[in-house]
Every structure is written in C-alpha cells, then in structure tokens.
Image 1: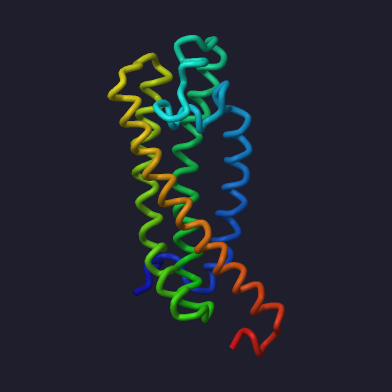
Image 2 (image 1 turned 90 degrees about the horizontal axis):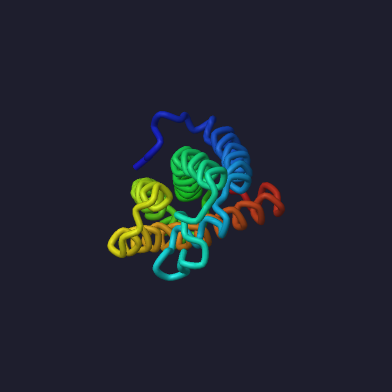
Length: 179
C-alpha cells in the first residue's frame, strides 16, 4: 500500500528535504517563544511540575510569547508526523532495507500520524493552562496525552534513524549496496 499517492515517487525526496527544513525553521521559532521553564515542564505538569513557576505567575509578555509559540506548534504538529511518516514509508517501499526494517517502517509510517491529533489535544490543554485554568484533572489530561504522543514519537525516531543510516551506508557502498 502506498500512503502518499498525492506525492509522486520522484518528488518524495524533495518533499522530505522541504519538510526537514520547514521543521528546522519552525523549531527555531518555537525555541524563541518557549515558556519560562521550557515546553517539557508545561507538557508534563503532573510529572515535571509547573508549581515552581505556574503560568498564572508569568508576566503578560511571557504568556503572550508562550501562546504565540503554542500557535506555531499547531504548524509543527502537521510537519513532523508528515515528515517521519513519509520517511518511514519511503524506506519501507523504495530503499530495499532488510525485510524486518521495512515491516517496522511500514507500520510506523501510519502510527506516527497518531502523534498529530495527540499533539493537537495537548496544545488545547496547554492553552487552557496558560490561560489560567489550573485544575488537577486538566493537568493529568495534558500529562497523559503528552506521554502518549512522546511515546509514539520516541519509538518512531530510532526506526526512522535506522532507515536513514541504512540508506546512507548503502549509498557509501556504491551501486552494489543500492541494488
């Protein structure tokens, strides 16, 4: 099954590079507009705690910068699952990786797409936290959704990395490695 019929095979490489650079640019802006204690402390309020500097004690400028960063994260949550999914799909279908890696990449090319909606739900919860809602149920909800998202992303990252390393190694071997 080919999950990206709307991108022709000859444009997969260009799409991957375009997505990669877009991710870098958005990540740079997200870093510039991060909350005072960073994004992870806000994404895991029940585990890492926001009690040291809760959003209710932020200045208006800190709150505004964090909300702008949160808006950028809605763009980021479209880019990174699409990039990782296309990368895993490309590896499983076209790069002649070992069968076990092709099967894992094929599975993760779909699984990583679940990170987008989880990230969107997380962002809605973070917006509520930054806006002043500070209930324990909301904090647990944001923590749980963030944990599920990060579990998927951190599981997909080594798979995508392994496929890139395999592809790079095959490229270095020359035509006999690319068969």
